[in-house]
Image 1: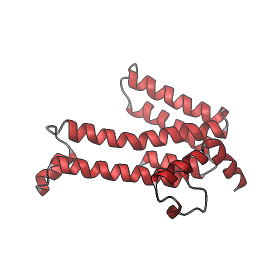
Image 2: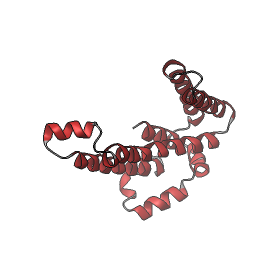
Image 3: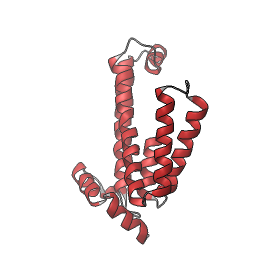
Amino acid sequence: MWGGAILIAASRTRYDRKIAFGLGVVIGYCTLVFIRPMLGFGFAFGIASAAVFLLCGKYQSEHVNDLILRIVGLTSCLYAVFDIKSDILDRPHLTSDAVMLAQLTGIPSIVWGLVWIALAVLGTVEVFKFSCMAPGETISAHVSSASLLDAFKSKTPATTLKNKKKA
C-alpha cells in the first residue's frame, strides 16, 4: 500500500522533492524511536537511508527525486508478492495470518497465500498503470500489457516531469 502511494505520488504530482524529504524525516524518526540496538546494522541502515532521502529532497533535482521515488514505490509493491510467497508458500508450517484463517474457515493456508499473491499482483499492475497515465487520461486507455509497456516507455521520469511542469 505504501509503495503504491509513493509510486502514484511520484508520478502524478510535482512534489517529488518534498515527498523524498518527508520520507527521510519519517524514516529517520522511526529509526531513532524504534530500531535497537543503536550500534547495529538496522539502525545504521535506517539513518543512512534517512540521510539519502533528506539530502536528495533538499539538493537533487525534481527528476532525480522522481526516479528514486518511482524505484522505491515499485520495489515496495513487488516486494509484497515475494514476502507473501516466502511467508506462506515457502514456510507453510509457521504460524501466519493464512494459517489462522485456514483454521477459522477450513480453506487451506496455501489457497489464502495464492489469493493474496493474486491480489498483490493485480494491485501492483493497476497502480503501475495508473502511475503511467497522463493527467486526465482514463484507465480504459490501457487495456493490454503492450499498451502498458508503451505508456511506460513514453512516460519516463524526464517526459513525465515535462508534463508536470506544463500542468
